[in-house]
Amino acid sequence: ITTQASSSVAQIHERMPVMLTDEAVDFWCSDTEDYKGLLDVLRPFDDQKLASYAVSKKVNWVGNNEASLREPA
Image (cartoon, rainbow, N blue to C red; front, top):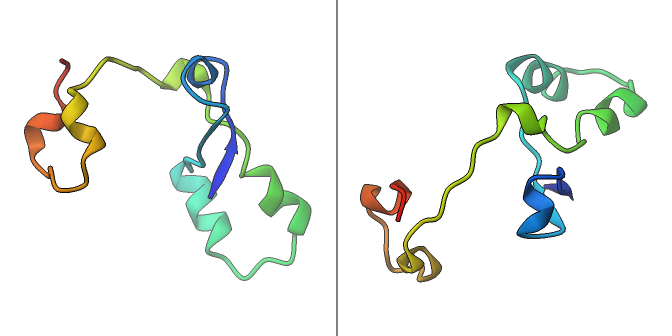
């Protein structure tokens, strides 16, 4: 599930994956009928809790699947 990008991610792309806090995961997986509340957890993640760095261009190929691809380039 994607949402509008937070301001820091918007420099890269207009959308970003929805990232849930532990509390939001519990709410999302609950048996609630609070549909407004469910939609509210689909908002962009807090920029203050995000960090970014450049990675290898090898991440663009699905055949590459190694831990080193998470390291800064």
